Length: 172
Ligand code: HEM
Image 1 (cartoon, rainbow, N blue to C red):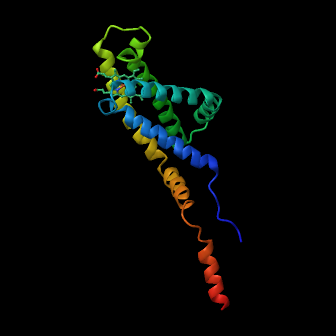
Image 2: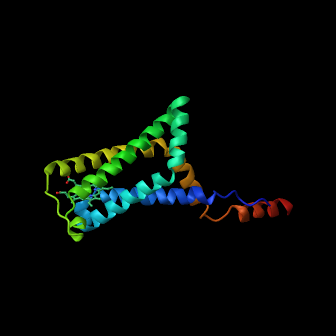
Image 3: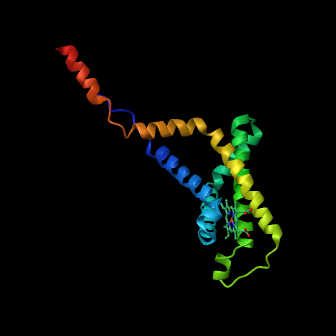
């Protein structure tokens, strides 16, 4: 009997990593909930993870960018532009966050003059991040539902026993 089709490990791993990034971002938007020290370290980890992720895939980004802007394909182009905006936004959130840091910078003996514009920009870019991530999720919704369904059904008991029972009933 053919074994049930299993989702490739990469799609499952991707879904779990995406979920982790999403929860990390949600936590980072709530400094009053986490406390400022956790907020700053989480924000730095988040920024570093996204920037590293993009640098690792830099060749892909350039190659796809060239292709997309020579041959128009609306949804893929929208996705690309959205990802680019997300990258710029996360870089700005991390930069402005560091400019207003109350815990991490003083730990390294640095204390910047506290200009309110950085706090305002930090708040604005993180609001933009919430909107961009919402759009990013909306654009990938069918993939999320498909992968999550396969992931969770793979934990359920396999229908094999049920199918075998039916075969025995027919034979009797
Ligand atoms: C994904 C990354 C981040 C997100 C989504 C984020 C989001 C936010 C939000 C929503 C606030 C509240 C703003 C307000 O009250 O209007 C805030 C405050 C703050 N963030 Fe971040 N942040 C991030 C990264 C960072 C980093 C990397 C640092 C510093 C190293 C940082 C330092 C701060 C500080 C010091 C405040 C308090 C500002 C104040 O109320 O005076 N943040 N952040």
